Image 1 (cartoon, rainbow, N blue to C red):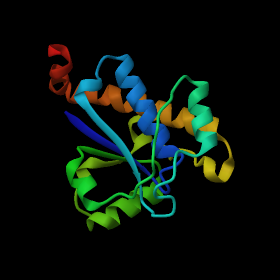
Image 2: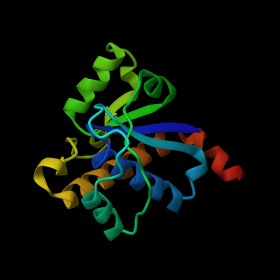
Image 3: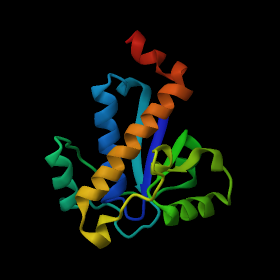
Image 4: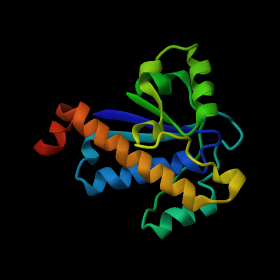
Length: 161
């Protein structure tokens, strides 16, 4: 089982979008049994709140649905996940600060796996949820392709069930 958590500032836009997109992608590829997928925030600003309605509407445009409640990341989340995928450079610094600089081998920007490494656009400030979705979708697909190459043996569970 590969444990993955997606992280953004408030956990109501980008990281829950990434969580739900990645769940959708692995489900469609019959790989869901190989993953435990979650998301969380670097801040406590939105703890307990649902996914932001414009983010949910953007997901629904693509046939992706799901429930979500924001929660703040803990050091345990970092220790218990194989991959901590942050949305931007600020999130990266916040997560590294939380760990005291440790565990950097499992903390990556989501779009660092793409052919065009970049931050995931923040729709909270731009209102452009379509761009954020496209960045998230690109990053999630590239991350899965990376795993399929680098961690091929981890997917044996899905083949047996």
